[in-house]
Amino acid sequence: MNVPIPDSVEHILLDEAMIQQRVQQLADLISTDYAGLRNEEFLIVGVLKGAFMFMADLTRRLTVPHQVDFIALSSYADATEATGSVRMIMDTRINVAGRHVLIVEDILDTGYTLSYLLRTFAARNPASLRTAVLLSKPERCKVKVTIDYLGFEIPDVWVVGYGLDFADRFRTLPYIGALKPSTYQG
Ligand code: 5GP
Ligand code: MG
Image (cartoon, rainbow, N blue to C red; front, side, top):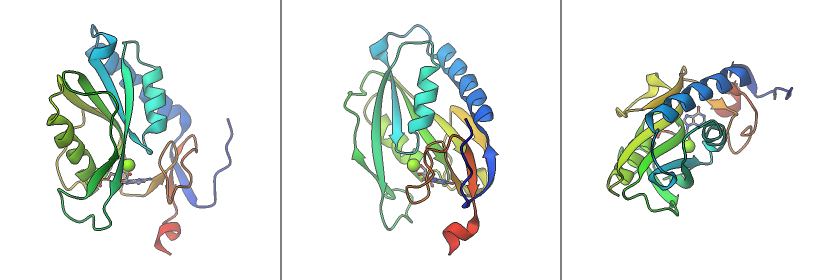
């Protein structure tokens, strides 16, 4: 597939082939680690909207039975404090208690979002709780969060595509590109 590169994208950081190869590796690891569970024991929770493409590709490659569900988050306008920067605006429909839960997120930046999610889901008594995250920006990390399955570490640039957006644009590009700083600075 040859999708034209928008003017706002400075360069491609991760092309389709690199992403798909890594997603397959993560799916293989997860399939090994969660082998032997029944369908209703393994729940994969995707964080909308950013993780939708990663979630779809990852779950399609799993060889173990699993259920899927989604949550949606919203950042508070005043997103400065570590604890209250995010809130859930859509919760799972499946009850997580007693299930092995894997949270699938697009990107770890400061870490506030994922640490909020881990606290929230841990309080619901899952059988186990792990995270699969496609991208991480280690330079931006403010709170330490354990990622069990990480796709790629990337530099401190704003990335779009493969689910990730800038002002709800560029989300469905099949690759991950770095946005031109002029796009978000002016
Ligand atoms: P954190 O709470 O770790 O600072 O932020 C995580 C969230 O910030 C991600 O779920 C994502 O929505 C957003 N985010 C952080 N960096 C980027 C980026 O480079 N591109 C996009 N599209 N979203 C980002
Ligand atoms: Mg997000």
